[in-house]
Length: 414
Image 1 (cartoon, rainbow, N blue to C red):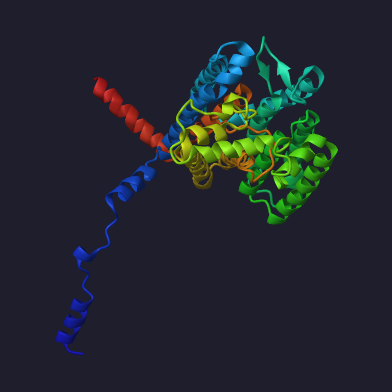
Image 2 (cartoon, rainbow, N blue to C red):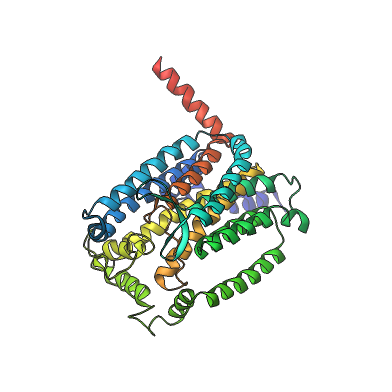
């Protein structure tokens, strides 16, 4: 081929900068934000605080009628939730400053405290709604040890599994001691009548084992055992069987066992796109049981419409993305496993709660994380998220970014 032919061929394949497929500016900006060393921390902090504020607003709106009936004031329940939120956020920001080594050191004491509380509730616990899973603290305030047990299992389980430097390749390293201890905690919680948190402990355990590299056949075995156990527990308790049958056929007894699901779906359906307006819910006037706790998602759908429910889902999705992103990218085995445990806790609990409201899953009585009323659920959740935020701040890139920020701030002061 002649030189002119070569030149012609080269000219044919010459890349024109004008024809380069350009990335839209918003997409480039979003990518830059995600690539920032502190993006995981800020994404976690932002989604947590937004969910908490939205939850406080909706607890106030959903609980006014119930609060008047019980306490004579429309604000008592909401003020208690605000108190729990302030306490939880204060502890969360303290936890954000802790180190990974602190949680490794605190793993065994945390498990011991959880074990003592789970045993104590069987002796001195009080029964609420058919479940003996509360300990009286002061006045009207109670502690639910099963909520604390979830956090203890995350920290201790991550510590024990991370000690297996090559990963749990054998059944012995998987079954001893993490799985037996987890099963003991589940049995103690089950003795209290709290099936919902038994499922949550199982989800946390499964999430950490998956992050540790457990073989898939172990999860198949755990799934079969769980299904058999749930079926047996359903047969042993008439009210659980009622919930199961109402889930299968909610229209069979709409005025009986299917009432709560029916009213919850009616609330969601009447909200439309924009909702009927904040505070204007009709279902909270006694038609919808547990409007400010287990079924607060229905009130959100009624008052804020699809915009409100979609906002909840987006914030939960952003939180889950940040947690599992940290679990996937970190080089610290303890951080990877603990983050996976917290992520499984938040995601599965939200799925079970929302699934029960929508009628996709049976009602189990677990709250919507950071949104439903209840200090025993809210405070441990905030502490767990604070721990994950601390992990995000301690990643190598994040530490360098924080040092640069601290140096720049010192120079500006001079």
